[in-house]
Length: 209
Image (cartoon, rainbow, N blue to C red; front, side, top):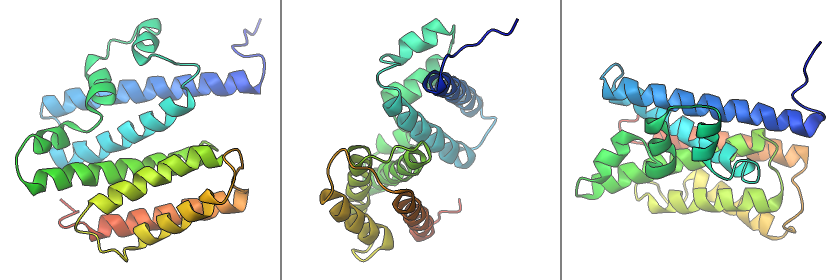
């Protein structure tokens, strides 16, 4: 006899999200251990860690009501992942950025801001993929991204990402909080985010290494 975990589409989606959350925590734990043991380099570790943190933030915000505590989630599913919980919940940035930020000087603060921009880009793009298209879901993500881009002194005022985000924020401000982006608008926003992200990465000095 087949045992069903869910009774409807909504429940199925919830369990799918639980599985994704479980996978992100496990992957972060493995990544942290690999970095500490010097199995992977800083240049390989940092982008992967940024991606996992951004994916975690996106998923955690959509699971706010069903998973109020990540520690409890980890305990329920017998997950022994202290390094992952520290990275995702406490630090919120990769170890490499954390260490740079503890140094003095503008280089460290710009490294932390670059990390913040990358996270905000990925969070916004992943949210759209998860169909989080209501104005009150999209607006704060774009506002965070815009604020982090404006903090980065190496980007000129006419930088594509700054201009596009400003345009989108102005457009969303004219809509109601519960209004949703149409499929066409969501696709256009995702395209603009992806395009701005690529331009952002290309604008970074020594982004290759």
